[in-house]
Length: 322
Ligand SMILES: NC(=O)c1ccc[n+]([C@@H]2O[C@H](COP(=O)([O-])OP(=O)(O)OC[C@H]3O[C@@H](n4cnc5c(N)ncnc54)[C@H](OP(=O)(O)O)[C@@H]3O)[C@@H](O)[C@H]2O)c1
Image (cartoon, rainbow, N blue to C red; front, side, top):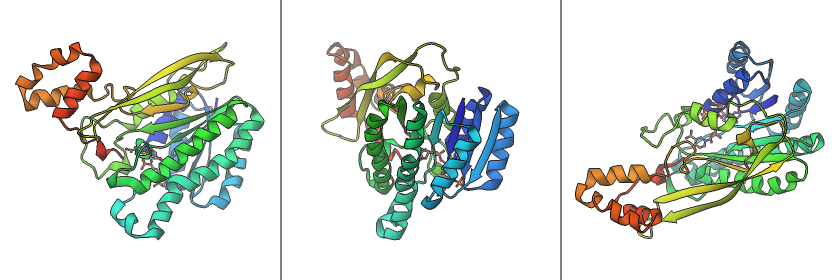
């Protein structure tokens, strides 16, 4: 399998690259730090990659995208998976007050990705197969006070991906929007960590799945429905769930997880193995053991009622999601 990783020195990208290397894939890495690229490339070769090449690029130099991607496609002889990982989490206060800074961040998290997608789409159409996966964020789902410039840029990309997905479906090209929640990486080094945090390795496992591609038919998973049960009193508490519809389509040479149109790596049980129900129960137990005794009674009326009752009584700071 031929894998192109853009923003390859990100913690999530590196963890993903290691998994692809262990599967024996050929990789081309794009990032802005040459020394880090060289180190990563030798590490991946030791781990079993068939071949690793790399290009150095500051991804905010949009004019260089075409040339760099052309070189990557030539180097690999086509691409099965393109994974776009770069991003930056700015100081919200600073970017809110300084448009120049805001523009830089919007370019990094939004416009540069649109530029890359504009170059990648025709190449994948020509191949008539493959997957383009982009790491966006749950921060793009709605504007939150601590990070809405970052969120707005991620939202731009997610909306673009929705449209592109429809367009490329007919060409046997999958578009995957990966939306992690809190990940312990250099980007979030300054935040205190807690039980809601995941690791880059865990996210990477979900992205790549350690299974080699199947030989006959593959299941194409599509997001059927996602729903939010929100507390009316505290809209910040949100239980999110997703149901996946699986249907068979002709084989594409990519891991199962990348055959999903949207990969929520967040509060839906995919990485944090809970939709916050268990955390809420634990918080209620800590707050009042007597109220917790009512849990079986609430549950009689269904899980949604239980979640609703819990959300009225405990608060989980979901607004801290990046
Ligand atoms: N960490 C989280 O909680 C979280 C949550 C949701 C989504 N995400 C998204 O996940 C992706 C990966 O982030 P991460 O957690 O792995 O953080 P990370 O390790 O800090 O990775 C961010 C990467 O983006 C690269 N980058 C930034 N601007 C660039 C530019 N102009 N040109 C080239 N590369 C550039 C950085 O390069 P350098 O190494 O050279 O600085 C770094 O490698 C990002 O898109 C991020 O927005 C992260």
